[in-house]
Image 1 (spheres, helix red, strand yellow):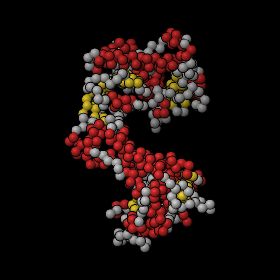
Image 2 (cartoon, helix red, strand yellow; image 1 turned 180 degrees about the vertical axis):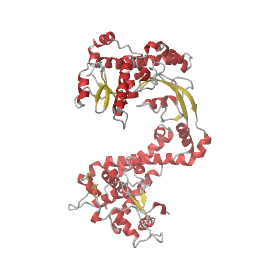
Image 3 (cartoon, rainbow, N blue to C red; image 1 turned 60 degrees about the vertical axis):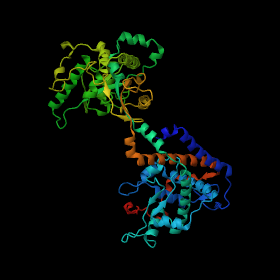
Image 4 (cartoon, helix red, strand yellow; image 1 turned 180 degrees about the horizontal axis):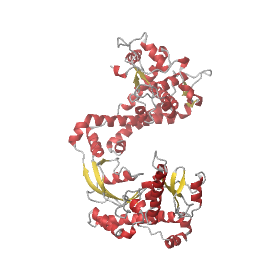
Length: 569
């Protein structure tokens, strides 16, 4: 949303002038405040800001108020520690002091009546640093305060005799007098934040334009040409081809040590008898026969291996070293050369293993050639679509040269009962493999959304940029084949749907309010960042107060949960 705002014309200029103007006033007119509290040489300060001491009690109180709570109201201290809440609380107080300095320079004050009204209202104000506008939302303090209540449990009215002092001490660790003084400074900083946010406006025309840009949707058709599929069906990794390729030293350098793979077949659970072992061994033998008959080891590992950690990676154990494996497995692996597989299942206490050692040169060759082959096929499909072919026809024609008619002799011996009696699946081919190029259609997505959920990296961002470009046309290609982590994607714009005035009118208030809040937060973040940059030499932080010790309560006081927020008037 803010990206759209940044691209605005006149409105953005006006917005920039307002913020820059406020910053210039600060830089040009700043003068030290004569009424600032100076830090005593004997006084411990968590930080000093322009000579003003942030005492450890204030730091500790802010920390305690900010600690996240779960749905039951319990403190999430582990999360607080993980997110560095001590530093966040201190950064908030430093920001508060900078804003107070500005407020006092501009003549802003907070009356005692304003302090009393905030307390009677049951609120505790706390400064969450605005450098990251989303932080306050994640801490559930979006408006800069939490609701504590300070009410008598019976009358449900503000109770300054019992509930108020008890809750103040339990939540903040401060006395009522200290709490009131602390809240006075928080309220003054809050006034300065309001002053910075006040000039920011959002016109209806601007909101409508942003709504249309953000809510308009598109769908695409796409064809993935995956490297995995290209390796299986487009690459001729014959010994002669690999040997010729390896003559180039730069290619040979890509061939690393051979990786070990396995397929594990366990006897049926709960049955340790000889029949169960025999069935598992027979299944392993049938899989060996299928590999020898031409089926892909990695695909069979994904389908049949009962070692879940390696099965998803085609049986890969992620190492070329046999050290650390049980002796039967180690012996079987060590006996193999690159490209070889055990002729018989290897039995261990885990079951029966079919072990294979990759040929490093073949692996490197396939990886390099699959990139070229996948790109070439994607370009071929895209060219055919551009020339008027339907995507499905273009894909079918592109795959035709690689589809071989199935022959009875192609079926490996013993494959009819690879699952211990159940008929085995037919060997996959270029046009039946699930990873083959196929035309798919996305769900409707908006600008910045995920057109293809499984696409990683910047692919979806690139698709969105092209799909919502002013010159994008339905039925046209969206750029050249898109390079992704798993292959190349041919992308066609299938349809678009522009959001209209009617939809905007239904969401006008909510949407405009969200835009305004985002722009105000960004304006305040920019303003505070500039304050910190200018005052950097005058900010001193005592790092000892950023340890976990600041999270402890004073005098054994517990950090109590707040009263039910549902009581807020």
